[in-house]
Amino acid sequence: MCTRQWNPKIESFPIIDWVFHYPLMAAKSPAARIEEYVQFIDRALDHPPLPSEELLPFDEHAAMVPEVRELYPIIYELYTLDFAALFRNPVYALSEPGLYSYYEYIAEPRSLRDVVDKMTSSRYSSARQVHDDLNLIWKNCAQYNGEDNEVTQTARKCEAWIRTKIQQLEDQAIVPHELLQDFTDYVEQQGDHVFMSQLQMVITKHAPERIDAENDVSLENMNYGLFRRLQELMEAHKARSHRSY
Image 1 (tube, rainbow, N blue to C red):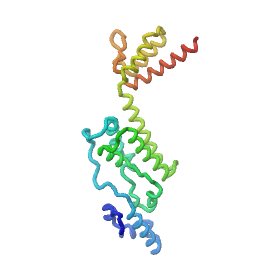
Image 2 (cartoon, helix red, strand yellow):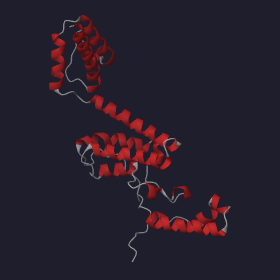
Image 3 (spheres, helix red, strand yellow):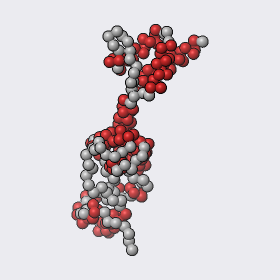
Image 4 (spheres, rainbow, N blue to C red):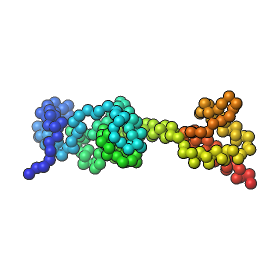
């Protein structure tokens, strides 16, 4: 007894119209048409189910662990962007003969819809799991299409977009007090006017609100974006000081 379930979206697919009106099929012999028709039915029986409903709008109250919730608006935004449309939903391998073999080559298919659905249904316990699924989308694309394919280049664009957004999110996080205290202690011990001037220039450029009317600098509640820039200066200053001995 066959236990495979018929996919409603496949069942409603206009098979007869597809066979006789698909542009390439019209030029083929009856035998070739029948062979392709058989392939279509064979793939239809094994095709993974597709989402049956539209994705719900962003829900800020959805149950998620905090680090996954932080990523949700970013993933949802990418899902809605035009340039990410190819990765929005699971691959419909019956849409054209060139995709028939997709699920034979791709053992762990993923789409942005899969990721968002798993987020909203609390199936991720860490941000790492979200990143792993996103990376699987881009990896699958390159594996099936090849690194130089236009579709893969679009995947790389999506990957870079996500990376930039996540970096911006991380830059906004507040540096823990202990870590900031180590930096503050080092700064207060220095009598190097050049180093202090460099610090002030960076703060003036990236966080001018931290400098008051008397030219004093506040380092409290610093975000990682500014902190990383100041740390680079501190490490460079340490290296110069070490070489001078």
